[in-house]
Length: 254
Image (cartoon, rainbow, N blue to C red; front, side, top):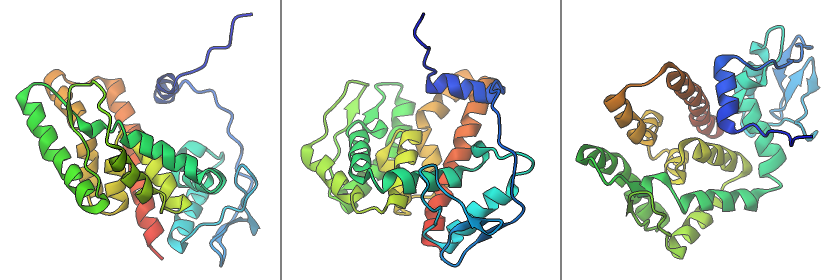
């Protein structure tokens, strides 16, 4: 019997984009959605549980209302792909609380090979764009984290100083499970821990951060154009990104 083929993230994304997912969605089984006094989500008066059976309790009323709106927006069926805030909340409660140090280490590891540390060798126009958008992140890290990142030309890995990664780890370790979850998911989405940390700190506007994360891609599009699949894939990433950027604001709201 041949080994089972493991679907890669890109293959899964392609099937999502092209609608080739024959997924069975659960039917909506509830009529009312409410936010309790302690910010738990109630369906027909009963609290929702996370996949690991913890109470889906949110840290702020604003986030509670936003998560409740996702549940209210479901029609005949419940589609988790349209509920990004609920998915983030489940991760924060079920994983980030129990695996806090592991996630801190993973974000620090990303910082050790951060996308923005690797500048193009040519053409000059692209290098100038990278410098314009990426240098403010190095300045912010030096000022706020006391972390000096090394830059490289090309894709050959350059090890970051231990004290730099230590400063990142110390900063990230202070996050609560909710902040940690958003920073981690945003880091994996953009390829940059530095960019994610700046967004968490409100040190860069979301629209500017999105542009910063796509300097290389946008330059390539200008040179060669883009195909339909790439456009749709980017749109999916943008929807997820917008949800993450909004997540930070909801954590800071009352």
